[in-house]
Image (cartoon, rainbow, N blue to C red):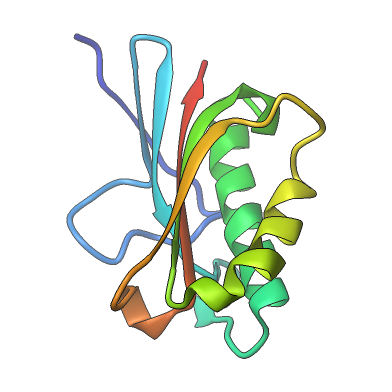
Length: 126
């Protein structure tokens, strides 16, 4: 099995013992991204639309580092601090895909890293 670490400065550095993504056997596994601006390392909070756009930009940067884009995404998992945020997150999330949306689940959880409202992970094909 070949395991390739994918990291880019255009997405936030990991805040624990993990990598931004791992590529293996033509698959890309992207760790959950939260709304941190990688240029400033600043947490974005207060507006779920802005937070979700930052998460999606972070994911996009990792996809690009691996040489792919959102059209290569097979599955996503969205974690929310409150299911009442679902409609707004869903609208922003959907704007990043042209068609043939990936498989997905969305769950509300008791807490997320750094107290954020949204975290998204992805699996893509290379």
